[in-house]
Amino acid sequence: MTEHLSLFLISLSAVFFVVDPIGVVPLFLAMTSNDTREKVRRTAARACLVAGGLVLFFALFGGVVFKVFGVSLGAFRVAGGILLLITALDMLRARTSETRTTPGETLAGAGKEDIAIVPLAMPLLAGPGTIATVMVLMAKGKTLASAVPVLLAVVLTFLATYVILRAAGLVQKVLGQSGVAILERVMGLILAAIAVQFVADGARELMGL
Image 1 (cartoon, helix red, strand yellow):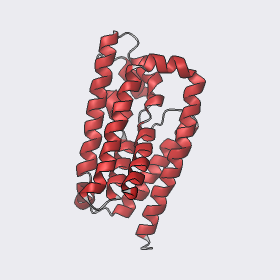
Image 2 (cartoon, rainbow, N blue to C red; image 1 turned 180 degrees about the horizontal axis):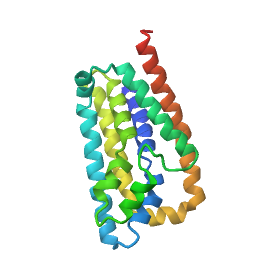
Image 3 (cartoon, rainbow, N blue to C red; image 1 turned 180 degrees about the vertical axis):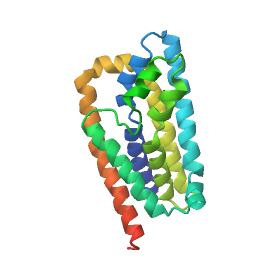
Image 4 (cartoon, rainbow, N blue to C red; image 1 turned 45 degrees about the vertical axis):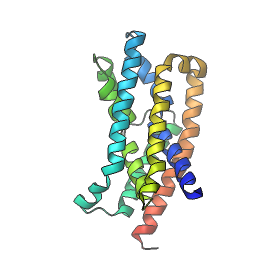
């Protein structure tokens, strides 16, 4: 029970911080500035459903990638940790990581009629870092029961993301630009520690320690 609770807390913090709904708020507001309140709500709901479904799919079936490409779990943990560390370093500098989206992609998204799927769901919410994170977390357990904390963390993260995006205007008003930047840096610091742990675990496995 304690082991599952620990895995759930690690998974929830890792997934929530790498999805980073707080950091997505300014981009979401910019891309939906001319939309009605109802359209903003629908956009947030569709984006979270699609992103959450995509992440859950990779959590459940991503292990097939290891077998198909002959990639060891240790190698994937190191690669996922490095990718996560790059994202964390960008968060510490309070800027959007280019592992998720580039300025050009964000600008193109602002001009689209429907942004829910691209670029909001993918790659902003369900980017490479998020997918790699859940796959590494799922690989930590050997039983079906150990998968439940990770899957629950994904579901709760995207429920929280929907609430945050639906109230994006209020979040931006309450936190302000400096508040968002401070939260980004705090989350980036914790995410960096999780990334280093991923790399360390992977390195130990590769060296057979």
